[in-house]
Image (cartoon, rainbow, N blue to C red):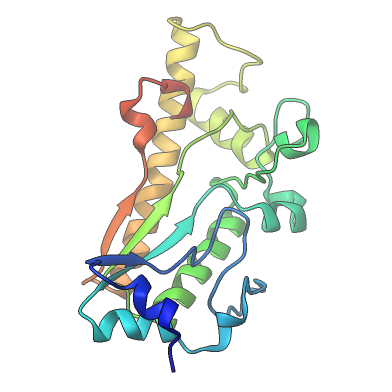
Length: 212
């Protein structure tokens, strides 16, 4: 049966996140066919903590990190968000975060598959998708092609705040990240119309516009 600690963790709560269902590090706490390793022995409990929440009237929210996925960044170089140098920020400065590119169709398919796994494994009341923004402009082949299609020219090496080039770059970021976010919401709603979907776009109200 459940431990006293697990029972105590429910006390007084109205909603609980299924702890880092898929985290920025790339690990998860549910069995996953899309090759994730478990974070703990709790993986094979068939959702004990989830069932405790449901039995006690507590709503459950699943969590997924959209861009920050260190494990898949390291495993799939072709999915990486690349700087102008051709390296990822993790490669160039040792960042603990591995960033994956939303314009890469293979990475998108991978994300959709993982979302399906979460929704098939348990029945969340909501899904929270974290950090859908551009930590930096990406120069991968997919982004270069999309930028040229969008603007008619190559991605600029740099832009100056307040110039038409900078405004164009921001419009590009907003457009394609917005399309990615919308595709995630559509995918969830198609499979589970009853599930509430939230994206953490807090940067949009911080005044930091370069994240798109």
